[in-house]
Length: 240
Image (cartoon, rainbow, N blue to C red; front, side):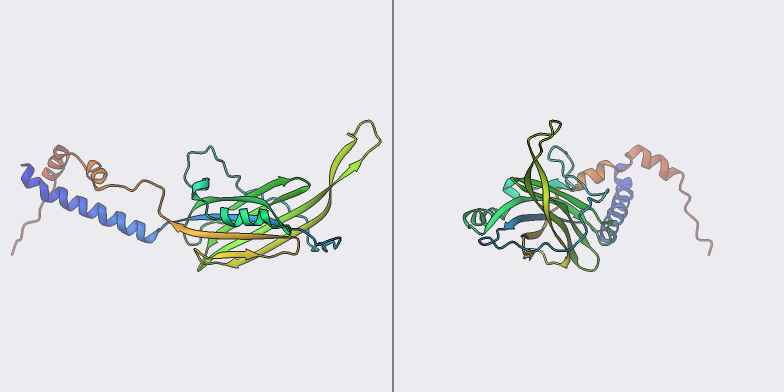
């Protein structure tokens, strides 16, 4: 009986495997790593840089804060051994005209025309405050959207007993807002007189566990269930 049922099981497996492959082809999900370095361009001498006249940045409500403790693979922060811009960051630290502010990244699944998902970028480095968002998305081509604001904070002194003697308040705001088409494995530099951003996007293997053939077989109906089901099938007779 098992030998007779084998063609039915094989046919069912082929049908399900074909449907699974077609579904993946129609809804192909690619995975990427996105890495960035934000660094300060230090003014030479006493030459102050002119702030770009833009509206102050407001963090989008839907912007996602990366969670290093999350078990989810999607939008998980890059581990140190997954980052590849450490050499650049170390060189920037040795140059007097530059100073790294933030270095990070994340893993992201992406399908064509997926809803935009902004990633929060917030960092405090001394009297420099960085806040903004980076959005990686794909329409016909891959794009990175940057909206970052650097705030120069200066100490202020209050005589009022209700305030601390030394407080910090923003003095000058610099904002970089740009959308750019990108290619994977290429480094991309976003320039601003006051600060710069270096990014690299790599296509990676899916971190999700693949579905094995054994799993597909295990999901098939049992032999008894197929036997009972096959007894209900009526095969039309050829009346000619």
